[in-house]
Length: 75
Image (tube, rainbow, N blue to C red; front, side, top):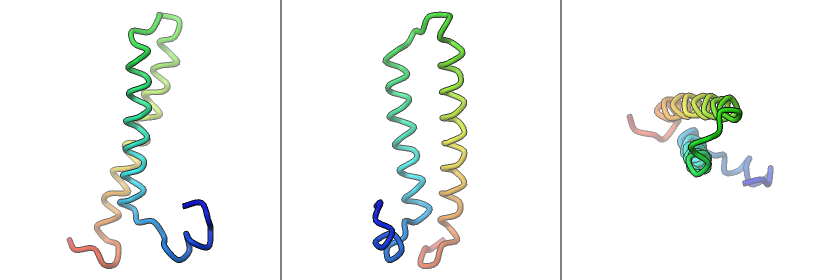
């Protein structure tokens, strides 16, 4: 949903954003696992990717919690 007019009329919910974030993290994890085991000289780069993905999962958790308070959502 890259069209700003459509986005204004149909804003994505926090839950939708969280689902997209989790899907992206899973995709990135699969790609990382395909490269394992990594050589010692690439361990730090792989660790940085995992750190970034951990942060994205944390953000997704916040979005799921925020979805509980969105109008029209039952709790």
